[in-house]
Length: 72
Image 1 (spheres, rainbow, N blue to C red):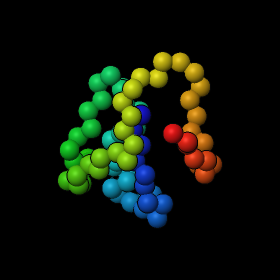
Image 2 (image 1 turned 90 degrees about the vertical axis):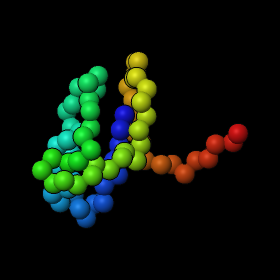
Image 3 (image 1 turned 180 degrees about the vertical axis):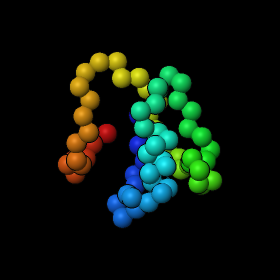
């Protein structure tokens, strides 16, 4: 799973639209993210979250932060 945290005020910018088109609906087994976004010659930003593991089963969901802390 790769996630980019996008500035909400830039959602409709050309760079964000190019990033969305570059990473959306790709085959994860062959995905290659180019160094530059399509047609913009803008460097593709690295993901804010890049967790490369396989999802083996289950219903994975992302929930808002609860503020809970972990006690080690």
